[in-house]
Length: 262
Image (cartoon, rainbow, N blue to C red; front, top):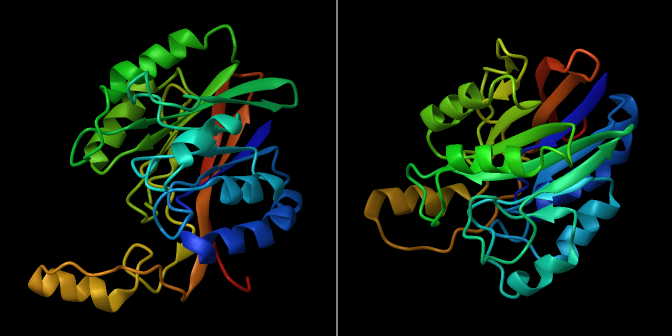
């Protein structure tokens, strides 16, 4: 049995510091074989940079995925090629820099990790995530023993549809981007683990990781404001996937949701 933790969107310094602080103990306590984390909000709440990516990897993260904020930090488009354990969304145009997947070696099992961006209510130009996922599965068929697919999408319907589309062909399809953990963790009939959103690793006394007051004010009058990363009630949120490599199916997917001090 392989046990994999997928950590939801790391938001700013509070999220990344808590994860780096707790991860060594989590790996031991939960007997984790691999840890994958979405880091697209790790730098001041928008994007990532080389220093942060290096710190996360040194703390015990095996692979970092990214989403629609992939290019928000200046210079990252140059730095990304220095990090083979970091992948940008696979369905971005092929001319974009960076790897479109990461292979994580787990007890001799080759787990291919990649992200597809949704196209419903999302601004970044991307190809069809369904066709993109199919393309990645064909492309990596001889390089991987299984696939963990991140559905970085706004619409729950798009995430759920992708889960059904890949059922029986992926170890798990795990949703990110909306920062709110959902109550639908489970295994689809074909043996693919699924969760609509694994949640946010960051401050929950916030509006999706940002200070509450300016967000509320912006909703009230529509005026632009600087939305700083919040600090309160920091939590780690993610999904723990138990995969049976003999039976070639996921046995269980569970939400992991930890408050500071617990």
